[in-house]
Every structure is written in C-alpha cells, then in structure tokens.
Amino acid sequence: MKEFNTAGTCFPEDHYMVDISERVNIIRKMVGQGLYFCINRGRQYGKTTTLQALRRKLSDEYQVILTSFEGIGDSSFSSQMALAYSFVSAIVFKMTWDKNRDEGLYQYLDEVQKTYAAARGIPTDEFSLVISRMCIKSEKPVVLLIDEVDQAGNYDSFIKFLALLRNMYLSRKEFPTFQSVILAGVYDIKNLKLKIRDENEHQYNSPWNIAVPFDVDMSLHADGIAGMLREYQSERGVSFDEDLVANEIYAYSGGYPFLVSRLCQIIDGKGFGWDRAGVVGAVHEILDEHNTLFDDMVKKLDQFPELKNVLKATLFSGQKTSFNPDEKYIQLAERFGFIKKVQGCIRMSNRIFETRLYNLFTAEARMEEIGQHGSLDKNQFIVNGMLNMRRLIERFVVHYNDIYGSQGDAFKEKEGRRLFLLYLRPVINGVGNYYVEAETRDETRTDIVVDYLGHQYVIELKIWRGDSYNERGEQQLAEYLDYFHLDTGYLVSFCFNKNKKPEFKTVDVGGRTLYEAVV
Image 1 (tube, rainbow, N blue to C red):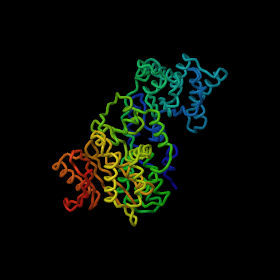
Image 2 (image 1 turned 135 degrees about the horizontal axis):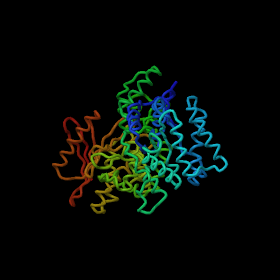
Image 3 (image 1 turned 90 degrees about the vertical axis):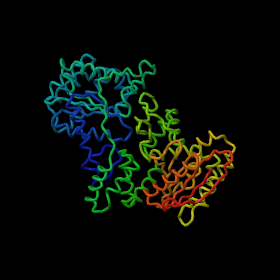
Image 4 (image 1 turned 135 degrees about the vertical axis):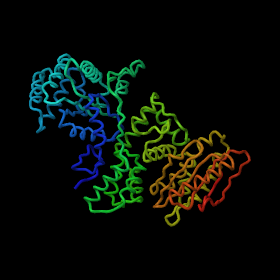
C-alpha cells in the first residue's frame, strides 16, 4: 500500500504523488533543444523527485547520467583533477548496478577509472577528451543531471568544472559533448560564485552564462492535489470531497511540495477527517513541529539579518516591498521559497510559512509587556471551549492605551498590528491557529483569521481614515464574512486623532454583526 512521503525522493510505485508529467514534458522539450539550465528551488521543493522522473522519461531516447555531489567528501574537490576522477567514479558506480546500462559506455568509463586510479586524478585536458569520447561511445545522446550542486558551492574546482562544460558547449559543433546539462540546487550559479568570492566584480561573473532561465512552475496546484487524493480514496476505500480538501490544502501550503505531502501525511497518520476541520488540525500540528524545512528557514534568517528585516516589515507593518530581482535579499528570499512575486510586490509564498514566521517573531518579543498581559488574561476569554473575541479585543484596547498611549503616532501606526498579534498569540497558543489574509493586507488594512476549536473569527485591523473610509471597511468586512459563512466579525481601528477616545459599538451591515473598537 502506498504512503505519503516527506523523507527524500518520491516514487510513483511507492508513494501518493501529484502527477508531475506536464512539468517533466516541458523539461524534456528543453533537453531536446540542447539547453543547459539550472533547477533552483527552495529546500524540499521536489527537485530530486523531478530529476528522477525526468531520468525515467528520457531513458528511451537518451543516455541519462544522474549523479549528485552530496556527501562525496572534501578531498574530491581538492583540485580539478580530483573532481574529474570523482565524477567518473560516481558514474561507473551507478552504472555497475544498472541492468539496462550501455555496455560499451560502461566499459570505456571503467577503463578510464582504472587508468587514473593510482593518481586519483584526471588532468584537465584529458578530462575534456574523456567527456567527448564517452559521448561518442554512447549509443544515445548523453544528458547529464547533477543534483545537490549546493554541496559544491564553496569549491573553486567546481566552478572550473562548470567553465570546462561551458567551453565544450560553445565548441559543440566541433567536438562531441553532452546533449544537455541540468543542475539542481537551492542556489543559482551566480550565488555559488558569490559564496567563494566576495569581491563585487566577481559576484555575477558566472562561468555558467550559457544556462537558459528555468521558469517551469514546480508548485503543486489544487487540481493535481485532488488527483492524488482520488488515488488515495480508491486504494484506501474511503470517500470525501477531494476537491474541497485539495483547495484547503493548497490555500495553506501555496502548493509547496513538502507542505502538501506533510499535511496529507498528518491527516492520514493522526486520524483527522478528510475535510476542512481536518486540514486546519493538520496545519496546527505542522506549525508546532520541528522539521528540517523550518529549521533551515530559521538558519537562513540568522545567516541573513537583512532578509529577516525585510520579512518583518512585510508581515507586521503591511509595508509593500517592490519585487526587485537585483536586490540581494529579495533574490535570496525568492530562492529559498519564502516569498513570491505578486503584482510587482513581494508576498509570503504560503500561509504556513507566514504564520510560522509570525510565531517566530512574536516569540522573540514574548517578554514585551503586552504579550505578558495576553498570557495573564487568557482564562478570561475561554468559555465552554469558545473564544470570547469581543472580550479579548476590549482587554487589548485597555492594555494598548495604558502601555503605549504616550507613544508617537508613527510608532502606533507601525506597531499596532504587531502588538495585537503579540497579545493574541499566548491566548490561542497550543489550541488555535491564525493567519493573515494576504489578499487584504496593506498599509491601512489587515484581516486576521483565527481558527479555534473548529470555530473561526475574522478580525480586521485598520488605520482610521475618517467615517466614510470606515463605512467602506465595514462593507468589505461584511463581504469577507460571507466568504466564510460567518455572521459576526470584528473591526479594530487605530485612530491617531488627538481628541479621540476608546470606543466600542456593534453595528449591523447587510445582516452581519460587526463589533467595532477604536483604539
């Protein structure tokens, strides 16, 4: 019986998988055109699974060599000669166990390995000939796939290896070489260069300038997730609305492959229902767990403090940051899979990453006074398993004015939303989730959706811009409640008028009850 898999490569005969054949077919056409390119995506984004599927797809037409630089050891990168020998040895090792191997090619590479075994190195000029000869010996055009190229990023020998492949590509009409070369990793080749040379003049002087852009969408979409769930239903003999569940999974994961599989794995393994409540429960589980993806996220934020500052500004202030592909930290955030480009601005790539970062940043500020008040007030807000959001907002307004009333308007406008989340998080921690609706977040408005024990609460936080603006906000919130099939919503306005007073009122808008607080 198949399983959902989040540990390494997925295989269709063993694991429930979204059909990626369309993606593989696009890449196959690029190979047919003789293109060299890099598959650069975040951690656990399905790169290795894609390479394995591509290898199977290409094997009828091409001699596919799939190798990896992961775990080959520092000695293999000590020189160009050592790397060339390790490269050939890795190919020979894999072909040894391949029942369908090209015998002539295998015999030739085995002979090369034995010839240079004593020196454990192949001279650079000889290595060019080895590549040309192996392409001649092969019965089919040779395609080279190299996974985990990040492992090689600190070694000059690897950069020179890429330069050799480039030179052979440029002379491909004169000398036989690979039909196509595909590298896979998190960093692109420009960033690999950056890792070994800090001088500005070297940052973008890549030896891999022959590589074409790789714009293939590798995220998993709702229709593909639904197809995977239909296979699960058929094999397990269960029935549920796979389209509804798929859309909910996509809404939280943004199609990030690891998150899609992990949510399904949790629902299946923990006995959650295959419905909206089950997805929400799985989201709660994943937000509380430690895994390599989240650990790597935290490591990257520690490594790049400026990246952390950009994400904080985007999350808490509603600040719209333009997507500038030439800005180092924007480039890195996209490469790591943290953000995506939407209408020319950066946006968090999915709700799970966004909430995980909110939780991280608010946890770092947990000693701030308003967060401590949230912890102390918590028991006031939970009655018979229900969250009294109205009471929570009232107490937040009191603490906010007591603690920050004397602060300047600039501080309040920038910090209001962050402080509300600081107060909210300890109240729902361990039981509920929240996320910020990306479609409505800007510098003047933010919608927060709270899930607590199967109940939802929508709170709009906004800057007060007068009565007419407030009325438009009420109408927007009422329409948003319709989407969630809710009768009650909450509106918190941060007002900076000198003579303003805290105000609480209830209004009816289109049959929806809105509880409003002016801070």
